[in-house]
Length: 313
Image (cartoon, rainbow, N blue to C red):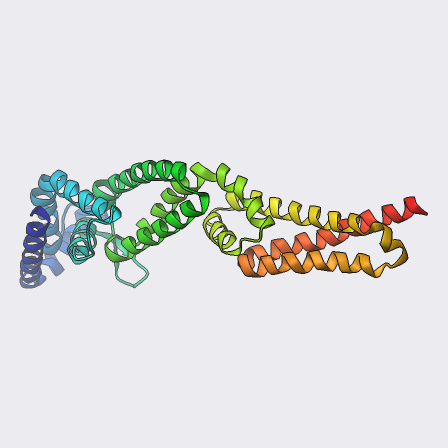
């Protein structure tokens, strides 16, 4: 197995160059440093012994075996997605991708990462793995989502893609570089949500009308990943609340002339109903928006009632 062989050889090689680098500390500290300062600058091709070992491995081992290695990694990931593989290979992939491929980009000159350690150039990781990984992720989920949504209900589809987001987030944590996380999420949003947003919007209103709280929670959790998806649903919810309120007032407008309290009760009934939907189905970020819908509702109902009373008198 090429991945197992690579993993073993990398661990042995990494130990060897660490030992050799320790032996050559005087050379690194004096001659290499002087050469960099006098002749090389930040982009110097002069490296310490450890870095030269990394460069040699990249040129003579990694790049020469790149295609079959990446083919095998992509096959393993696809088997995971197809539920044909367990997580026993996670440590192997973590060592290869996080500890080897990421390290094949040398430390950036003078730059520190969030942990205070020298930051590495991830160009090798991005060019040889991440670009292909994101491309194949797009292709995989385009095929799966188009097929699944045609033969299942929207609720089943939402459950499915909710699980897919969780799986890909777990994959990033398990053996990919953390910088890949936002790119994977962007890819999934585009392929799994944006590509099917018309159907999601079409079925949102019936969910509100029938107070399907669990389904609304799921829809919001997904579309909340991008403002451009959330805003149309916010507007649809607002308009539905206003329409329901106006209908409730119209239904009691005659009795409201004799007993104004019935008007207040009608408004509060609609308010309480949809305030509960907001609290049960939407997180705080949308709750504020929906609260604005209630304020707008009361204002519109007041205007509607005043107009009715003026006409009646």
